Amino acid sequence: MITKQNESTLFIESLKRAGILIGNEQEVIERLGEAREWHFAFATLAKHGKTLGIWFSATARTRSVQLKRLFAKYNFPGNTEAVFEASLQG
Image 1 (spheres, rainbow, N blue to C red):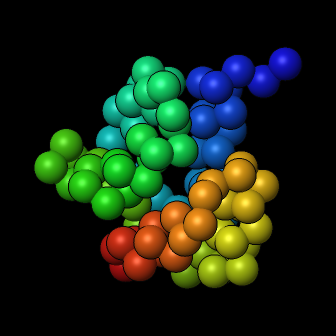
Image 2 (image 1 turned 180 degrees about the vertical axis):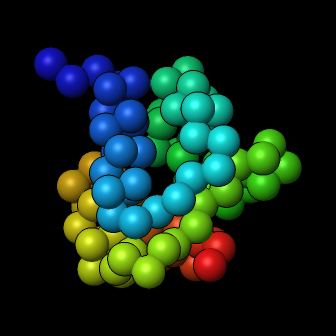
């Protein structure tokens, strides 16, 4: 059985495989593991994490369609992927 913490860590690993760079990754993993609702916590960190030294950046191999599939696979609500993609540095 996949636990909440394992699922959030798998999501982070999937983002990295999709070409997303994560600043202060360990902090992201810890915060998602502690959160009651990790999807909401991730969206908040993506939008406001800079004050905590957390950032997300696209690389040359990052593709929008791949991110859309990834967010759908992990059951993110509504426009979370679009908001995340808009907040990417790079």
